[in-house]
Image 1 (tube, rainbow, N blue to C red):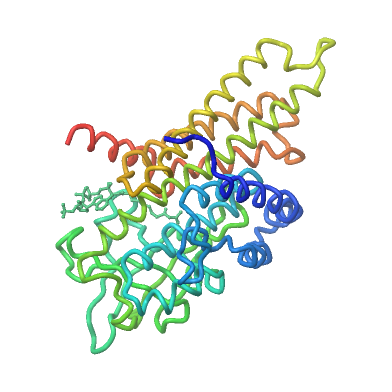
Image 2: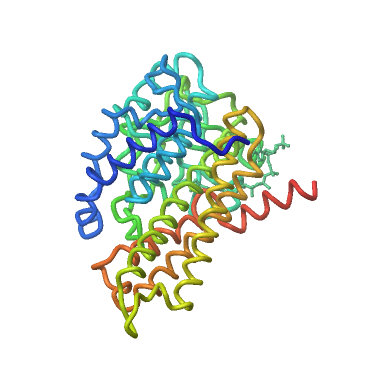
Length: 379
Ligand code: CAA
């Protein structure tokens, strides 16, 4: 694997780094205190072409490689993990399922709008009784004339209430498990579809997480994605790539926490010298640096495999498992380096910790990642 970025990838890194620092940083207090969804930021990201980085030009995207997209998530998340997850969900599981499994008509109708940021995408798999055991979902879809009638509910949906389209999974053959699950493109103003409760969360305050409620929602039959029964595989295949995005988000948070800790350790003096020169702090920083570097290698390796058209589900799970674990550890250690100040909202390290935790939960918990990895090892 070539570990050096191409000129194009370096340009992406520079552009997103500057954009995040200059345009997103001023918006953070509003997101943190008022849980304001960053609409304005998404508008600017659309203008920069960030809403469709790996999507072909013919569908309105920037047609860059997957690694460039991962660079963008990484850099955005260093400043705001909220903006990082909005883009990751929008692209990996909100847009790609249509690009990979949609008909030409579906791609023309939806991918164009999603890739240009005219539409925001979301993904509805999880239900109150079906989280890790996704195949146990209870939402049903039955054919009624030219429509499917969807009945049921979804929970913890990122971009819920803000998205224009939702990739929704429902059973067209109840009682048959994974084989009976189908995927649908559901538009926000579909009759019978409404947004339920908005969650109050520990972190990611600017990101909307809501319930979706389907009460005999009528989805046109041309919005079936793939064939009836293809849904579970569509969900799993796109989660493979989505998990690299979440690894990049966790990596961004970890790197931000690490860099904040180094800067603080250089400036803060106790016992007559910078705290970073005390071995107790210096060794902490060394461990944090090593963890961040290892997470970076796993994340970009998974992205590189995807760019080379190779299977990467196993590596995506490893990257997500490790990067999310160390994001929590590094953020906690950064708070420790900051001492009492780190526990206050005057410094960003407490936010990094709150934002990091969910990376071990969504798009498959760490326990699910271990299942995916061990299944491949043991057959
Ligand atoms: N790609 C393609 N197909 C796959 C696949 C993959 N990665 N993984 C499984 N499949 C296929 C299998 O081949 C199998 O097909 P066949 O029957 O034809 O062989 C079928 O799917 C069923 O596979 P399993 O028997 O392995 O399925 P399972 O019920 O044991 O579940 C699981 C496997 C890995 C535990 C899965 O349920 C899972 O990933 N659970 C976690 C769910 C999850 O990640 N949810 C995230 C919600 S989205 C989110 O969080 C987004 C957000 O808003 C931030």
